[in-house]
Image 1 (cartoon, rainbow, N blue to C red):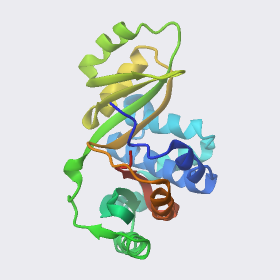
Image 2 (image 1 turned 60 degrees about the vertical axis):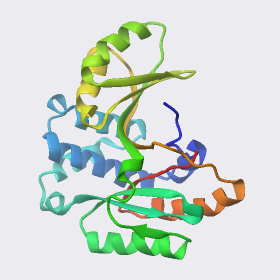
Image 3 (image 1 turned 180 degrees about the horizontal axis):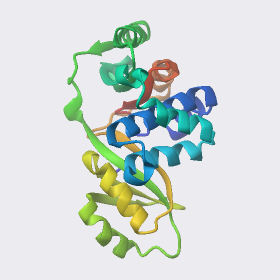
Length: 236
């Protein structure tokens, strides 16, 4: 499986490099995980991985604890996850995942970004079949890991494939197997570097550098919005 879902890692890291943007997104991930599976990390694999991701970004413990506590607050009751789909410049497909307590505000903002920057919002579900939802885990590659044995041990947890990179292994599982895979990796002593849910395009599209520069303006604007959690495209 290719890494096409990352339309350019360097550009994404640049956009996500500011704490003022990263921490609210991480906090919402923690809150949703605690709201969904309970506030005890030892009993909630999704919450454990959300906390791990937050710690990897140097998020303070106080922020993490506050995000967990927020899961039982009235604020969390009104917080909902929404997904918007649209076409950007040159027909690029864009899926925008949001977490918001005010969907009216969020959809108005997202729609305005598309309209002003060469795109248009599409009806819900328009591109759902063009992306596959996957649980994606990055673990540290060490000499102690027997790849064949690890693959065998992860099959029952929903393993779909493993990719080897220079200093890590990237593990793909079904979207619904996120918790099972997180626990299985822990049980196998894997050092988890990052875990996330991705929308991976089934087919990708090539664009010129000039076209990508224009597309990036829309992607940047979307990711700057406080309600936006993640943006996925079909860029090769």
